[in-house]
Image (cartoon, rainbow, N blue to C red; front, side, top):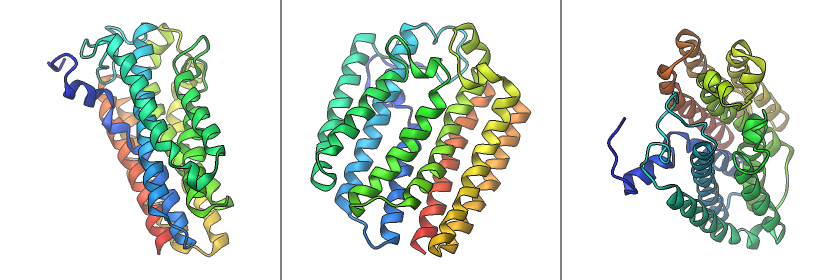
Length: 296
């Protein structure tokens, strides 16, 4: 295990799980590309959405770190990258303070969105905060009852893209929901690769992810099909005459398939950890291809 000084800046940086942060940034990038496509890009609300999304994701990662430690899901059998609290890098009490501070900071930036999206943005922000806490905290944590994938699709897909578009364009658009599904499905794969790796230890810890519930074969094909369906959904951009936004995302299937082949070949164990970074990279590739297509 890496030797990290307790409560150091490096410990906090690792606790943010930087390899996963594409899930927070890509939805805003794609939404901004769609807004620019319709001539409605607005840099200030776009930046506010980006900061809020990244801080909310970091708060979610901190929360998962703390509550998986409390529930003893993170133990000596853990196969994934080391967690800050379980590894002793950050005191549990300080992690709680970190969760609170990050949520407050996210909300402060989110308040700026009221000017662009109305007072309703407070409700959206509150739902986001409650949901990120409910993911692993509380008496019925979503991640422990097979709802983690739905959570990621909804909040890192539909909510993040649709409302990042809304505060710039001042309206909803069908294609924003399509873009939300495209981004959300690949963001789900970041969770899938984690759950695929941890399927045996999760089963012992009574963490009923979809892969624990439906098995290894399901997880393998679920990962592949998420990427394929995401690209197929891009065909909807033809309804707006956006040929490049339809075609370019299909290039993403090349790295997606290559990562999936590695996933199948490795199958289990710590060696799957390298695919977490690859999956996050693939999400960024898909997001950039779609954004470039919309701009063209």
